[in-house]
Amino acid sequence: MTSTPVADGDRHGGLWFALADHAPTAVEPIELTGRALRRPALPAYAAEWRRAERGVRLLIYTQDGLGLGHLRRASSVAAEFLRAAPGGSVLTISDSPLGSLNRDLPNHDYLKLPSIVKAGPGDWRPLNLPMSIGELCELRSRLILEAATAFRPDVLLVDHMPHGAQGELVPTLDRLRNTSTHIVLGVRDIIDAPEVVQQRWRFEGAFDALSAYYDQVLVYGSSEVFDVAEAYGWPAALAKLVRYCGYVCTPAGSDRPERTRARRVGPVPGGRMIVAMAGGGADAYALMRTLVDAVPEIRATQPCTFVIVTGPFMPELERRDLKQRAEGLPVRLRTMVGDPLKYLAAADLVVAMAGYNTTVEVLRMGTPALLVPRRGPSSEQRMRARRFAERGWVSQVDPDDLSPGRLATAVIEALSAAPLAHPASPPDLGGIGRAAKQLHAGALTARAAVTTGRGIRLPVDLLDQAV
Image: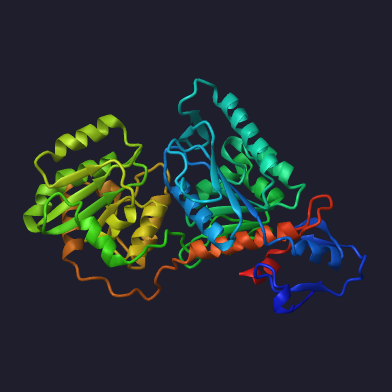
């Protein structure tokens, strides 16, 4: 196969090449990541290509339980995809109790699955429905399959788990592999410790699903910080599917007006402002309690006020305890805020756990950050905090050393420190745009395909010409 430039009038969605050197009726086999496929002759392919720019469809599957990170990231990608693909549409399938975060986004809708929560590695339980986990996952799997079949996506973006929770995505993947749908896995920079991921993915069949069904893997991170394929021992055939997008964060507007508005939420005027966040908040109590208990010692050295966002999933008893501890202190407790970015922009210091979304949003705003990663069971946050701290992007406190005195000392040091000079290797925060372009390009290849058997998919290196 050869590629030749085409005239401006024949450029479709940024894929500026044409397939050449084929007889008008020729059909020849090609090899793509171990799969024997068939490619139609150029005239039929070109005719389909001209239809590809209108109405592309993206289906997103994201499973988040009592977290916010996956859903926020999927919502950002959905919004950016629709900016890259005017006239396109996005359907997000998720089980978050919060529902859609894109309620006002045109051409986007949301399918809510019955919620499950992860009790441990490979251990899932229903959140609300009094059903066995087997019954509930069967229900979820059927809902996903019916939605995908009816929606007929050009691109399926699977968040984090190649096979879905409890393998619930496999029937849908099996159905879509017989179509032209471009199937993409999107993963954050760090999943867990390498030995844990390798063992779990082999046992659960994630590697098998990735090999059998997927055309591309988008990593929302940088290979210089963490090489996913190398760290997790992916075979060469799978490593070839990987494209690093950079970190995915929500683009922010002007810093000054955001800072001005957020300053008004502080409980008292003057002093420094410290904002504490921890995503959904289901496991944030230990950090928030320690910070509240550290407030008197911090204020003895640094005049400051505190805004603590507990997150919607912090248990009510824990939230009440924080409220009691904060009585008489310059602390404003909030369950959620409408625009977290304005708080991050306004803060003199952010104290947070080391979840993906909060961390990269802090980096985006350029606000000094003190991270206290989750103690466990996953090593993800410890690994991220350590690697980011090594590059001078954040400061951190080891969760095993967490106490009011230790946290107060770290906060005072962070507030007193001179602003960090620009690091030699600043974080790559352009991930959302690159991810959207890759997905749009995949949608166009799907629209251009004339399905024969498994469907037609361009090699990833050829797809790269689109972005």
